[in-house]
Amino acid sequence: MKIKWIGYLLFTVGVLGGSLISVLEVLAVQWGNFIALIVIALLGIFIVRREINKESTHEGKLAGNIQDISESLEKIVAEVKAINSSGEDANPYEIHKKIDDNLPDYFETFVKARESIGHVYGLQAYAEVMSSFAAGERYINRVWSASADGYIDESLEYLNRAEEQFADAREKFKALK
Image (cartoon, rainbow, N blue to C red):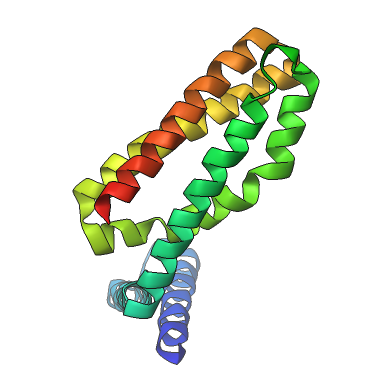
């Protein structure tokens, strides 16, 4: 953790120092100092990225993230199915409130852990799961907008599509195990 903060410090010093030199010496920039500070900033970036990669690929973290992904996909599918179950009788002005009340925490959990799919199962698996998940998320955003505007038919149509996409993402993820 300390090493990552050193990286952040190097990045900050490099960027601020390089900015200061370029502003103070507009016509006669001291290129040697400027380049040295840029190298310091790049070194900071390298250190931070290396430490973040170490943290994100730690075996315990990966196992926890895979569990979080599985649980959040299950909850998302269940919540979307529950919202969708009211069908034609749904109040269009209530759907977006249900989305706001029930889904954001599960989306956040999934998004925080999603990179672990690539670390554990490979980039192709990550792309396949994320393709379905992202489509479902776009449909949920469309449902939210249509609901807020009172378009029940569009809300229901895209709620069905979102449910299908999230179920597809869940099945693709289950198949990885």
